Length: 591
Image (tube, rainbow, N blue to C red):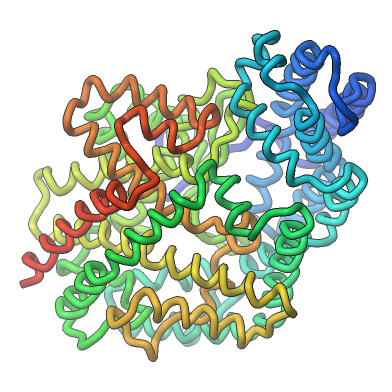
């Protein structure tokens, strides 16, 4: 089906027709039955902590095959339900089914923990030598062998998994439902929060300011339950990390991101060094808007005169055509996503803010975003399609081999964003349009380097304080403002920051330290693009192989394939210099 002018809703019919249909009920019942059979297989094979297994190679082969097969059907059901509730939190039938499915499949995560504990007891070198299946999953096995050192007893891990349903998962669900259904009074209108936040891109400063003030007022009214969500999740995470023997939540996050703390330190060192450059960009933007200093609600203000309006269909065709300048494979993938209605881009009530791409095994992806007629949304569309292209490259891997950390998950998305940006800056666009695109790119980079660092500092502060006691909403807001002042500095008016960004971002209510992987992805993607420009044809095959291998090695090993050392600040400084060149270009255009 061809795209239309209106931002589309996705069609999940390729999965199931309805959450209350007989076919969906049958799929769920089959899934629950197969999970019970998988538990019995684990019991029969002795997959639990309990010492070495004389037939470890054979045991792992049976276990991995069964687990990979089961996860395909389970993840398809999960994707269907997630696709429904994130685009319409008012759908009570889907909410009920999602809750039921989550409860009845908790054993899957318990089995993964049991497998990790079992691998920790084995002679993995012998297992790898004796089994091809084990060799195919070598990196997963080595990670599990290390992770086993940070497990509680089997009984405690099982209890933690059960309690998460009424703990962190419940808090996360409450945050998602409250924020997606929050209605905001703006002037004479009452609007969904996602629509109000889109007004930050309006060319009229009075409109932006009014929406910003209304947004803060709305967050203030729900700060108590949202602070409870934050305290509940961070408290649980901090306690479990300590009990499992992690030195800190940061150390645990680095392991989950397939990097070491040396890499994180190198990344953060380079980021902090770059803040003066980003502040110059913010100050230049203020001058262009005729302001003494930018307020928070000016961060996303359009520049370059009347910004070009991008209808969805135009954006889709531009992205596809530009992808085609890189490769036919990438363009064909984008077209298939449009034709098969795999994208939900319409902003509406009950739909969560932001954007994501979700892999649907064995071969599909789904993209959710809130499209607005600006280049920023064109870039977001390219970004999420980049994630989908990554999923395409992963298709030949088993699900256990596809476990990609967030650091490397952002590689393809940033690379695709860069392709789009370069196409505009080098194409037949007016100087005003190029200025708008350049500013949109710097705006995004500022968010990913400066704002992401503020989020990292904020989250670290919350973990440090939450270990002693619960924090009030006011204290959480203060921590947020302190982090923004430490990063934006004199680039923004300190009287108009955003104390409630902790309420806005759903990531705080999910994974721990979700933030720095986005910066890693931006700068790693820029570094790879520089390699691509040096020898495009030689790069393409290596790049697809890299994307297909993101679950097969740590980030440092994969980077080394391109001669990149991510454990020193120099590589990161090189990528940031590319952004600084754009800052100089922007300053010159502003003058």
